[in-house]
Image (cartoon, rainbow, N blue to C red):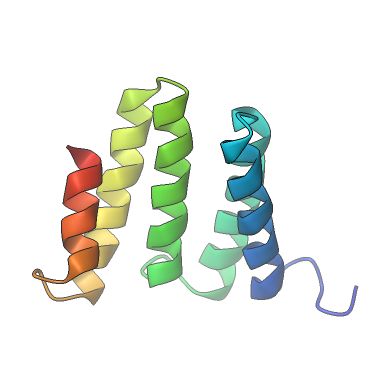
Length: 102
């Protein structure tokens, strides 16, 4: 309770936990935690923050593993939009996002 449930460090913890669950194949629970993480990030950082792009990328990875390719692509597109707004088009993170979309 020191930080409160809406603190961005709590979002980071949700993301770390979701990453482990994703690796274990527990995709539904991973998505639940990524969604909690994203909600906190949107509230505390705003929709155009690079951390939001990273969470979208991570969520896309889960959707891809579940075979939900349309949802994965939509999340990659959100990630790309943020990357293009915040980074130079030649930045390696932009290239990585295009690669993930391919």
